[in-house]
Image 1 (tube, rainbow, N blue to C red):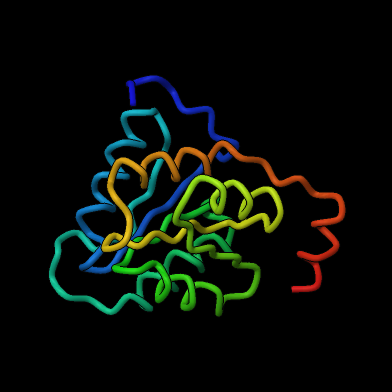
Image 2: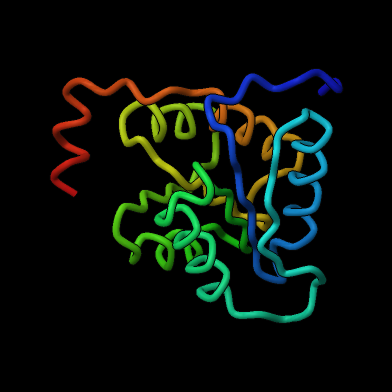
Length: 150
């Protein structure tokens, strides 16, 4: 993955993790910085044990308040972060594990948070998923009607 600008459909991206996701969060953050994406790191800032709901809610609330367009959450499985974030109104956090699930979460569900499992996915694939998430537009149309029902 070269040092070329990533054509993201979003202006502001935030990222957070728990201790299990810390190393992958740092890899993703540095990758996006190298792609000239403006990213706001909400922590943690080391791999000491923390509670994932605290970081998921901090990130989700930032998106709800429109301080960031989208977010990336990383924990061991991605599931705990997604469950916690989805408790916040207007948040649609999706656990993604391959290119198709990532593309569809944006196209059909207008997901505004990508949740990744650091214990379940390789770093190289994680970077590809982040790029797909940031490049993929919501299709709207029949999907918007369904999103509005959530």
